[in-house]
Image 1 (tube, rainbow, N blue to C red):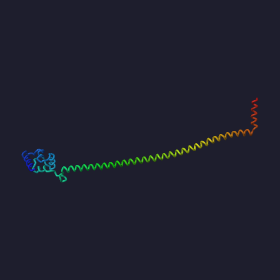
Image 2 (cartoon, rainbow, N blue to C red; image 1 turned 30 degrees about the vertical axis):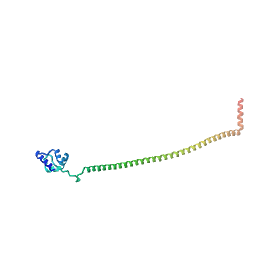
Image 3 (tube, rainbow, N blue to C red; image 1 turned 90 degrees about the horizontal axis):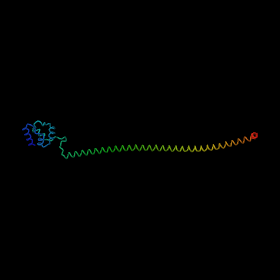
Amino acid sequence: MALQMETLLNIIESTGTNPPVTLLAKYLGISKQTVYKRAKQYKIDLHTPLTRETIRKLGTALPLKGGTRKSAIDHVKDQRDEALKQVAALQVANNIEREKAAKTWREVSDAYLKIVQTQDATISHQRREIDQLTNTLQSVLATLNVQTRDQSDIKTISGQLSRTGRIRSRSNHTTKNPSKHYQSIHHQENLQDQ
C-alpha cells in the first residue's frame, strides 16, 4: 500500500489532478464502486487532488455496524437463516389458514346438520299431522257411511211404514163406512147402465 500510495501521489503531483477512478481502484485493489462508496462515506472529493491521508482512507474498509467484517460463508449462512425464517413464517401462515379453513368447514357443516335436523323434525311433525288428519278423515268417513246406511234403512222403514199406513187407512176407510163404499160402487154401476 505504501508503494502504491507513493505512485498515486507522484501521478497526482505530475498531472495536477487525480488519476481516473478505474486506475485509482486498480492501485488500491478495490472496485470502482467501492472507491465511490468510500469517498462518499469519508466525504472525500474525488475532483480535488488526493493527499496521503485521503488515499489511506480510500484504501481502508468502511466500518461495519456490527463491528466485524463478514466473510462470504457468513453471508451465505445469513441468507440461509433468512430463508429458513421465511419458510417458518410461511408454515405458520399456512397453519393459520388451515385452522381458519377447518373452522369455516366445521361451522358450515354444523349449520348444514342443524338445517337437516330442523327439516327432519319439520317433516316428521308434518307426517304426524298428516297421519292424524288421515285417521280423522277415516273415522269421519266411517261415521258418514254408518249414517248413510242408517238413513237408507230409515227411508226403507219409513217407506214401508207409509205403505202400511196407506193400506191401513184404506182398510179403515172401507170398514168404517161400508155402506158408503157400497153405495158409491152401486152408484157407479147405475151410471154405467144408463
